Image 1 (cartoon, rainbow, N blue to C red):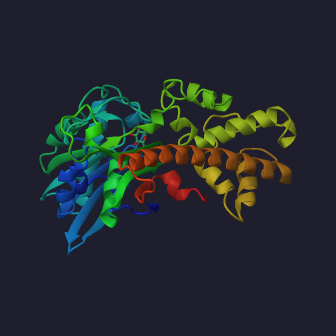
Image 2 (cartoon, rainbow, N blue to C red):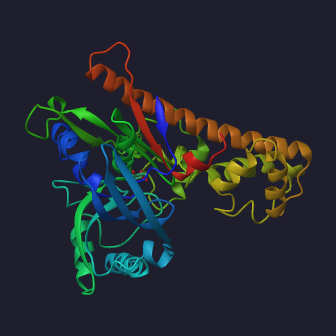
Amino acid sequence: MHCIAPECPLYGGSDSQLQSASSVPRHQLTTTQMDEKGDFLALDLGGSKFRVLKVKVSEDGKQHVQMESQFYPTPKEIIHGNGTDLFKYVAECLTDFMETKDIKHKKLPLGFTFSFPCKQNKLEEGVLLSWTKHFKVRGVQQTDVVSSLRKALRKHQDVDVDVLALVNDTVGTMMTCGYDDRRCEVGVIIGTGTNACYMEEMSNIELVEGDEGQMCINTEWGAFGDDGSLESIRTDFDREIDLGSINPGKQLFEKMISGLYLGELVRLILLKMAKEGLLFNGKLSTDLCTKGKIETRHVADMEKYKEGLNNTKQILTELGLTPSEEDCIAAQHVCTIVSFRSANLCASVLAAILTRLRENKKLIRMRTTVGMDGTLYKTHPQ
Ligand code: GLC
């Protein structure tokens, strides 16, 4: 299995993704996907950072991709505000980016990577089914986000942008990886949230007519367990995380795995150990008792090879604790357990998808490629 992680060039939405949405069969996809060239704009909303990108695809027998991008903040007022303000903000960032890059005068096609569960009947339409992760914007659920984006863009008469496609980040990752390796047929994200998509045989898809070729399925595996099927492996810490989240009872698998939650899981475990006198001589601190004070980046720092133990000491001290050497070793071990569980859970669901692909192809052994991306995947030392 070959994993492509860094700088997946089109992860962020682009023309290549035009053909990638769930409504386009693979046989159509392979002929068109590999031929496109030119300049495209892309928006990437829903991960740890909101990004606007300019993507140049050139071709000399093989496709080459050059990318320029800019990150924009996503303030709490925006991601917990209302839909009109969200799309107004997105349109403003896009026009600002075009101004900076001096491309306001150009009419460019745009791909919108929108990393949330959507019902897609067309490439340029996506009805948001529910918000996940840290987003909760009023008035957007059950509406078409492409129409909302177009509406907001119409207010900017100085730019002419053609919103051509909406894709999930997993699909963008799979398609991008496909430029490097045409065997890629799975896309996985392990970042703020977690999810995967894969190419399914049309003959197995009842919702769509026709049996020829393949179609991309966004599994939304982060919602695995929302029907109670993970109860035997969920812990008290997982239940506490869920109860304190903005969407209790939802995305239960994601809450055991992804970047938005690992730091908090570690905090809850350390807090319980401290309360039971197993850490810090039984002493607590205000920060240790405060939600969100340990982030996933801290977990990654604590687990780093060589400097990990020093980092642990510094992080715990900054939380207002006075850790002994044993406390640091124990805290580091807690991080490892939480991360290792996350990795194992991801591996097991990925194995299920790969088994499905292998069985679809009626093979005993199969060689395939998985496109991987996501902040947690890219920044966690292990
Ligand atoms: C959440 C979203 C999903 C996305 C994933 C990774 O699980 O629901 O659509 O792909 O996060 O960003």
